[in-house]
Image 1 (tube, rainbow, N blue to C red):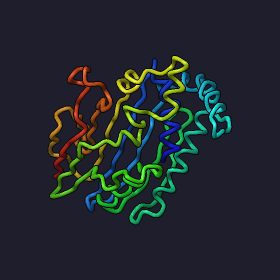
Image 2 (tube, one colour):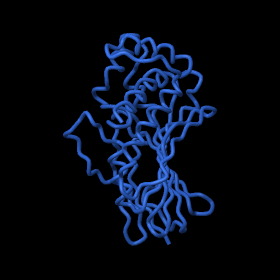
Image 3 (tube, rainbow, N blue to C red):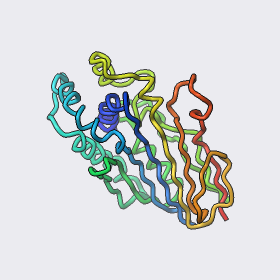
Length: 246
């Protein structure tokens, strides 16, 4: 996941200076508590820019003391998520791990099936864990399910997704040197979209910013979790939600 985070930051640091991107958390929950989860990076709006600026990132990589092989941006994302599958392969209750690589729409990610909510939380902890940080907490609760209520906790492991918000990896410093990186704009433009679908009908959702589908079986919420404190209240919408099912 460290390599995954490195590549995510590497390309977003440049692309997001003038274009936005969307992190997508998708969940399908069955009545028995099992389901499917996916995490996707949607770069569709930044596709051409990322491709053009791939040359810059490769130049930075070539100057890396560790050394690296020049690759297209989409290849680097594919390989990063492929390595991320190893985090899940030995997690009991996790199966059907699939790499998502849509080079036409520039969407990259990973999906898997889980046996219950506890297994899902374990899988997410394993997926977003940082091998280099042995002190990192690995028992984060993302979801709770009880009495036909799905609770999304106000937890977003931004360190694992985009690097430490106050101290990004070396890539950030390299882009600063090239006058290409703006930390503030990078964080402000990132949206985080949660889309949860169910076999049952949704009765209500606690988060009033949630959008319910016509069949009342899917609920969507768009937030700006990394926006700075000085931004508008609308951008500081919470990702927390309690969804009550029939």
